[in-house]
Length: 344
Ligand code: AQP
Image (cartoon, rainbow, N blue to C red):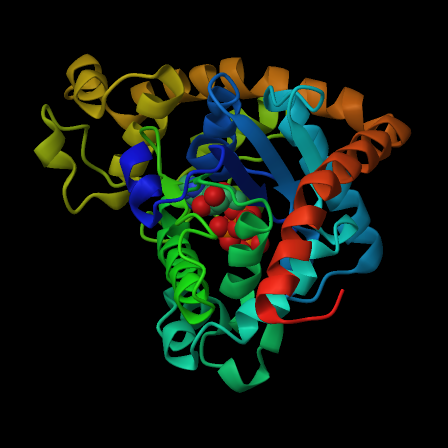
């Protein structure tokens, strides 16, 4: 991976950046696909973890809810094990470099590139004429988030891979257009772990998502033990018992998803899970999955609740994080402006 980041001949420091939108409750997909990896990467990298409230407003957010969700996402980060003192945790809108660089990238990225983004097509659906312009240029803001810090590595779930490729294209085009080879690194996606795409508990073909209306489609990090167990009990399945090999999960999206969740939570392979539960009915498997889920997630939920009871503490974490983020991004923005020809 590090070799990839060096393909632009970028020789600056290795740095991790990632973010989560404050659009609602953090869920198991955010945890397994992203936040658990954020935590692990703290060992080896300087990390910047952002609550991307500007991305959140690409779809309408009630202002009071947005504030609450930004605090809850921050609490989720810390409860999962992100250390805001060793690393940097802040909310995107507090650092103006994100918006400034996004504008420059709006002028670097091509319409054709953005027209190919599948997430825009999925989210805008048939009402694309009614979608916000922000939703369309969301990937340009994401590129700005990363490159405002010249971050080299970006841990994300599978769904963000295409956006990361666009960030690399933007970095490369900027470097070429302004004849500043290796000015920006080409950021490398880190799609890690065993559950890079966790699916809805109600539909094994749809991604688990914060904005899905049904609460039963996802396990939230703040759910208590009873709620987690109930959601797993009610999770959609098919009538067959679990197969005795992984190939038998093919064309059984709900079974495949539940086995994948078990594997990721237990840090086992799917093969090992299938070997343990070969031939078992869901009435046997689901209580085991519920117990495992509660053992991993309930302590996180409890810690989140404690943190949320002290919004002053959360706001202070964000304020201090933003200050440290600005100290990195502001000098980079000054360089960018000089490269572009803006008088500063
Ligand atoms: N279901 C998922 N499985 C694995 N990873 C996931 N991620 C999101 N859903 C899953 C990863 O979590 C990080 C933060 O995502 P985000 O909140 O910024 O945006 P998203 O991908 O659009 O997530 P949601 O939950 O679907 O939000 P809404 O409903 O607001 O659009 C990313 O790294 C993402 O890959």
